[in-house]
Image (cartoon, rainbow, N blue to C red; front, side, top):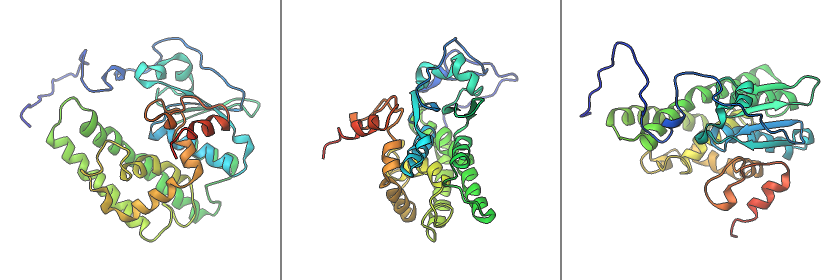
Length: 286
C-alpha cells in the first residue's frame, strides 16, 4: 500500500471518513431525532430494509405463511438507513443498536421487542414451532450453523463487501485479506453441502433462511458484482443449494420486501398484505 497510516495515540472521529455509508457512521449510540414508528393492522410488525439481514426475516415470515401459519401475517415498514431512520427514537426504543431489522410481536398481553436477525429467526421458529427441530441433536446442528452464519457474514458484508465494493479507495491488503476469508467460508459451505441437501442436514431450517440472503445471493451473482472475482461457479454444491432455495416461492416473495431499488418487480418498500407482494411480482416480464 502506498499510503501508510500511523495511528494516533488517541483516536478521534474525522468529519469525513469517506465511503458510501460514511454519513451514517458515528462512534456513539442513541437516537438523533424523535419519531414514532408506524404500526399496522397485524400483530407482527417489522421495521427493516431489504438487505441480506432484512431478507432473512421477511423470507422466514413468508415461509411461515406458506406453511399455513395465518398468525404470521405482518406489516413491514421501510427503514431507510441512508437517511438515518435507524436513529429515530422509535427505532432505538426497539433496538438500541440501531441496526435493521427490528421486530415487535403484539399478539400477547405485553409487546415483545426483538432485534438482531438471528434472534428474530429463532423467536419466530419457536413461536410457530417450525424450521427448528425438537430433537436435541438435530436442533443443535441447526443452531451450530445459524451461529456460524451470524459470526461469518460480517466478514462478507463489513469486510469483503466494504473494501471491494464500497470503500472510496481500493487497497490490496484488506481486499486480499477478506477475499481469502470469504473463499474459505464458501469452501466450508461447499463441503457441508456436498453430502447434505440443506445447510444443517436433510431438513429445511432457519440455518438455510439465515444463510441464503448472504451466501446464496453471493454465488448467484447478486452481491457486490464479485461473481467472476470470487470464481463462485467453482462452488458447485453451494450453487446447487442456492438455486434450489431460489425456487421456493417464499424466498422469491420475501426477498423483495422492504426493497426500494432494482427492477420494479423487485421493489416493495412496505408490505401489509399478501397481495402487495403478488402485485409487484406480477410486473416481471414473462
